Image 1 (cartoon, rainbow, N blue to C red):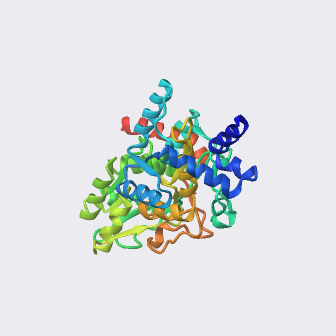
Image 2 (cartoon, rainbow, N blue to C red):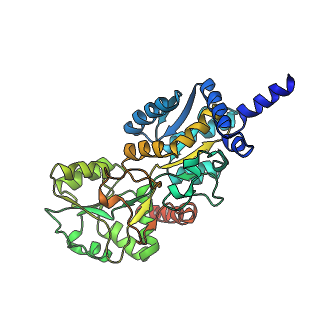
Image 3 (tube, rainbow, N blue to C red):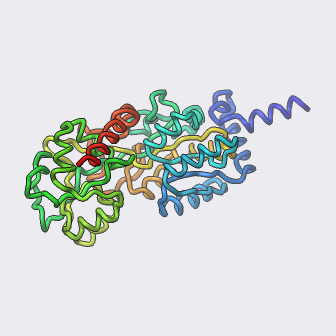
Length: 364
């Protein structure tokens, strides 16, 4: 009797990967799912997106009958909360969906996440032919912890075509033309995020003198508020904008406003990133079985489609519909994009440039 109890406990508590490897197959998955349903819920921390807040819980519950509690908020604030919980020896969150900065420089660096790869066992998840890279795309050096589920191309900037003619900007050097002085808006390069990504990209490609001329001498308007950047673009106040809110800009374009994307320049390749489309399994998850079921589902075709539609970005899977997306956000085969989620760029180069940008802007 005792042996039978210990065997049952092992089946329930072991991750699906271990169960599958031991020959458990479908029964192992079913046992893990039954254990997840006993836990009753999974707690997922993600970006403050109303679409994700609505879509993920509804779809996951419909699929597995398990409640998903979605905690939306800024990744930095969530990470600070998890630091405090770790220090107190408690844990309330199972899974994190976030950008590379939080994943790499906080969760990974401070050993707050468990290996994710061994937990992924659904056949459609581990089948490399289902993924655009021919395999699961992990961001971390060990190819183990942080799974990249989205990959989209970012435009270099947007223009208001009542003030800037299409084709008028051909080179990155054109941005330094005196006629665009006080006509450019940029995201704040001194805080982690898209603004520092772009500044670091320009700094690496063209050096400090170029960045100084663009961010200081051209007297751009710098903001952390993407809605404000979008409004300035739409009104033509700052007709060249690097940092306007893409989803909102797309709506404005569909409404007929004279806004156009500039996907790349002759001397400046476009960028790719995952946005908030990365997932990691937190250590000491309070609902470990439900967490394992959730990450498998999120990496499946069904979960991938829910995530892609909620965030408005392409999936890293090759079987998720992209017909609802604007063509410019889908990376084109054969194009040498600059990947702002590349590991060394994230953990080393970008932070160095961000700190240097603070010095430059403080001393202007």
